[in-house]
Amino acid sequence: MAKKAATEVFSQWALIGKDEGMERGHAASVKAMLELALPKVKSEFSAIDLGCGNGWVVRLLSKMGASHVEGVDGAIEMIKKAQEKDSEHKYSHGMLPEWSPGRRFDLVHSMEFLYYLQDPAEMISIIHDQWLTNGGILIAGVDHYLEHEESLTWPEHVGVHMKTMQISEWEEAMKVAGFREIEIHQVASKEGFPGTLVMLGRANH
Image 1 (spheres, one colour):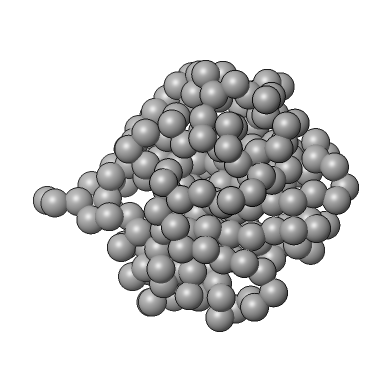
Image 2 (cartoon, one colour):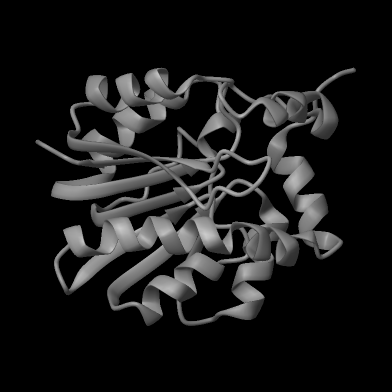
């Protein structure tokens, strides 16, 4: 079966309201991720949510003290939905890794995005070199990884490309990109789910 672009699938999901379910499904993992990341950033911090969907994490970060926060997503209908829900924050439609935010951030957050790319390690390096301030934090979560056996059927089930990497490969990508103080966590685990795999690191320019 020919694989569809993930951006096309997620635009369809936005149109039928599946974005709300994604928000509910990811809430526990994102809460745990932000509890890990926010103590490591300064109090007046700027942030971007990469793969922002309907913008719910952007709005959450704003409530949690971000002085500037914006979102980017490759699915146009998700961005339209974010803009309808929230006129206060900037939402950009951009195809990654080519799109650039045009500024640097103290925090880059990404949940359930990186493995849709052909080369997630390349994106991690771009985030380190071009998106983060010196000392800025990347926190990225993925539910599709080799050690999460149930997730290995997802590419076929959803009909989109997913890059399957093991935990050690994700950690190596952080090291090669130049991050320091790297932490690897599995959060929000429950029966049958080993948890969202979380990569956290500090940019070192």
